[in-house]
Length: 261
Ligand SMILES: [Zn+2]
Ligand SMILES: [Zn+2]
Image 1 (cartoon, rainbow, N blue to C red):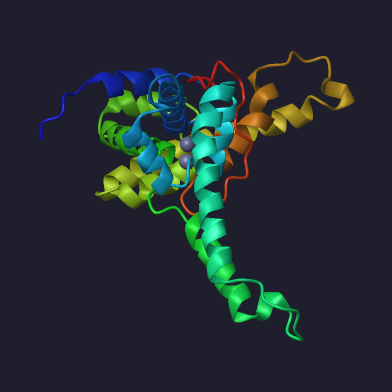
Image 2: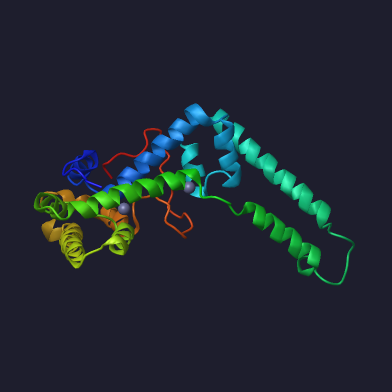
């Protein structure tokens, strides 16, 4: 496949590299935001989308929380009313199949009925397909990551990358898994080392300027480094990482994420 030297994603990445924060996180969060917004506006009652949501047991914890940020009680009530109904049916069915029985010496949780009932409900709770919003996030990450790795072959892109705050550590690890030639690894890691060094310096500057003798010095960009180091190490809040329980609070602003951290 022939890729144009400067396609839309290339231009978008170059623009994002002039801002603070990981551009892959930024584009992924924006795509999820647009998807959830579109979902609430257009697809709440769509039978195909609903069937997919039944299979995924609704959105994952993080994306269900992000859905709340849209302040759409009706949409959430319709969709999650259905999820609740599905769970109640599974619960009723499990209770019918594995009744609690009569009092006995063995604690109920250790009985066969107790184990089976819990297993049945845990099975129900396990999504059969990936959360649709997680899928959107992954597709976007995948697409922009490919473009970024290809861009490293060009000197002007590399210069922009070196001058930027780079990508977050979780995305750096994803990038390393996808590098195909040693030169790509070298360029990526050299550029990242420069961004990490710059961030380290900013953090030390922030701390230095707190001390009495340097308090008179003007405050600069280093004043936001304490926030940027968290994003650098763990990715932007709101991202869902494979195999990780969502622990970072989701943005709840109605305005949604932007390129800027
Ligand atoms: Zn990232
Ligand atoms: Zn999700």
